[in-house]
Structure formats: structure tokens, C-alpha cells
Amino acid sequence: MVNVADLLGLPCLDTDLERVEVALQREAATEDPFLAEVTTHLIAAGGKRLRPLLTLAAAASSEKEATEEVLLGSVAVELVHIASLYHDDVMDEAEHRRQVLSVNARWGNLVAVVAGDFLLARAAGIAASLGTEVASLLAATLGRMCEGQVAEVHAAFDAERPEPSYLNAIAGKTASLMACSCRIGALTSGLDGYARDALTEFGEALGMVFQIRDDILDVVASDEELGKEAGQDLVKGIYTLPVLRALADPEAGPELRSILGRPLGDADRALARSVIAGSGAIAEATAEARRWADRAHGAASALPPSPAGEALARLPHALLDTLAVPTL
Image 1 (cartoon, rainbow, N blue to C red):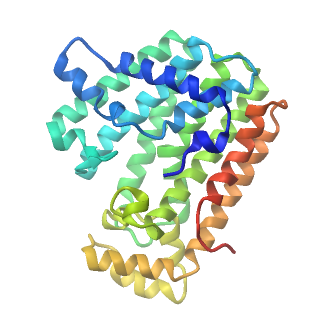
Image 2 (cartoon, rainbow, N blue to C red; image 1 turned 90 degrees about the horizontal axis):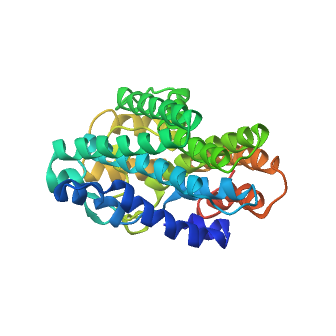
């Protein structure tokens, strides 16, 4: 699992992330012992903390120390992310998340949904304390995330899914929260409108890079590398960019189309992954991710010079450089 904090290489982030962990536990807690155990379950299991990292790094481009407002903004976006995982695991009937039992597997779907809603409520409360602009931004982002998720569900098992449908879905379900994370970092650190817009554009493009990278790994990585069973998107009928590019390939497309369009067993999943990996689809998807990385790099490069801004500009291509896949 790639360590984004290491890729950024900003010494200030280690201390700030420790403060975020403490604040996450505090903000997710409640006086009810049972609910507190449920709401802190995935927080205790750890995670990449990518979204808080983006908030902190965006704020650090102001070259000021992280304030309490910056930390709270980091906590708010991570609570939204964790809540989305609770809800996703219910929809996917997932049994594990972050090497532990998922909330729905341990306590049932109803508890998982309500606990996710509780975390969203906590995130909304934090956003409201940070001002109307942050609150409005978070609300709009939640709407985009829901739209992206519905678009993905609507396209399930559709082997004729248009590529713009995929791009719009991941822009909503993934990129919108990363853009929000960066903008909240800019807002809470007092950066001007130009820097806010540049960081928002950076976060959006980085989110596209991150999701396309994940979708490539779901095809080419091993279970051990992923920390979960590979090829699950294919099993669930979520046809991502490498799948769509393979379907459009004159040689691989017909064979792949004969496999897809229905839930897959282990043998068909392995065959589909092999067909996709053996086509030019992985290289094409990586090239598309690099185009988004170029956009993210350009946006971060427009920021006033600072170590944090330079680290953010390097991040999108550094993420893709961790992929051991063919290139065009």
C-alpha cells in the first residue's frame, strides 16, 4: 500500500497527523458505549488518511503552522470518507475492511448505516463551526458523492458503458472529496481565492489519478499487494477504465464481452483479468491517468513557491510511478 505521507515528504505532516488521529477519536466518540465502539471501529483500524493529508498539505502551502481550524477541517473530510466506507460495505455486502471485520459484518446493516449517518452528522457539525463556506462546500460534495455512487450502481454489468459515464462517476464518488479536502485546507489557512481555486483543481485531478490507479491495480495486482481480493469490481459488474478500454480492443474485446455482463465466479474473474492485462488496456488507462496527473501538476505548480506546493506538484506522478505496469 503506497504511503502518501512518504511521497509528500513534508516533516510537519507527521506531527499534524498525530493531532488529527486524536481529534478523529474525539469527534467520532459519543456517550453511548455501543455506538462509540461502532463509530470508532474503522478509525482504530487505521488507514491511509489521504484526505486529511491533502487538507494539511494544502494548508501548509500557506507556510503557516496548522491551526485548530485546519485540523478540524482534516477531521471533517476523513469522517465523511469513513462514513462512505460504512455505507459502501453495506451495499457491497463486504465482510472485511482494513484487515478487520466490516461494521455491517460485525453488527449488521442497520447499525452500519446509522453509524455512517452519525459520522456524517459529526462532519456537518464541524463544517458548520468552520463557517458557511466550508459547510456549503461539504454539503455540495456530499451531493456529488451520492450522484457518483448512483451513476456507478446504475451502470452495473453494462458492457456497453460509455467512458464518459465512468469518468463522471469517479469524479463524483472519489475526486470531489479530494477537491473538497484541498479547498478546506486553503480556506482554513487563509489562502487567497487564486490559491483556493488552484488547490481545488489540483485535488479534483489528483482524485481522478488516484481512482484510475486503483482501478488498474484491481486488474493487475495480487491479493497480497492489495490487501484484499483482487478483481472485485469485475465481480460486482463495475466496469472501470481498463475494462472499457479492453472491451474496445478489436482482439480482446469479443472474448471479454462473452465473459462480462453477469456476476463472475472465481474462474471467470481470473480469465477476465488475464484478458484485460494481456491487452493494451492497462497501458492506455495508465496514459489517461498521466494526463490527469499533468493537470494536477500544473494546478499545484501555479501556487506561490513553497515546500508544500512543490511536494503537491510532485505527488500525482509519484503515485503513478509506483505502478509497475506497461506504458504507451
